[in-house]
Amino acid sequence: MVRGTKFLVFAMVIMLAFILQALLIIADRREIPAKAAIEFTKAYFNLDKSMAERLCSALSEEAEGDVVDDYLSRVAEEARTMGFELNYMKCTLSHIETATEMQDDNTAKVRISADRRRYLNPLFGIIAKLFFLTETHKIDETLTLVKENDRWKVCEAPFSLVEL
Image 1 (cartoon, rainbow, N blue to C red):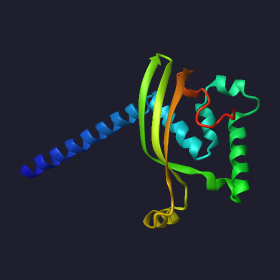
Image 2: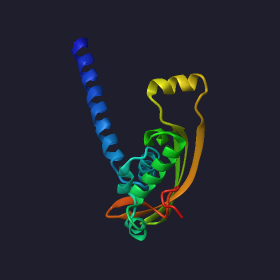
Image 3: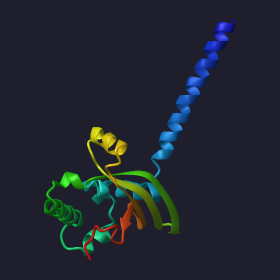
């Protein structure tokens, strides 16, 4: 009898864990400004073209040509002048913090702060941390986001994406 109740309790705990996990997955899919700002910032510093998905249409229309391709070309040229390839310029982010200020239902300002470190092979990264060979740079930027087609998108020349 005791054996059956232990199994029942164990089964109930497992079922509760699955239900809780499903609820957390559903909650994570919700579109919020902070999530959009983090996605854009990670793609921006990783030099990933997917950052274009998080740019508002007004930003891409006012610039001549493709904003993201122009930015990646500038970074590639900077890497060449330093004697490296484009991959050297990639950075990873850690300790990301956001603060969201809603202007109205379709506009928000997100202050994002993080630590930025040059991306290295994971083994080299461990060695670099042990011997203090890499520098950590602080990021502290306020991004303006607008809601377009039920998705939050970054506007107003984030970071140094658009050359002024």
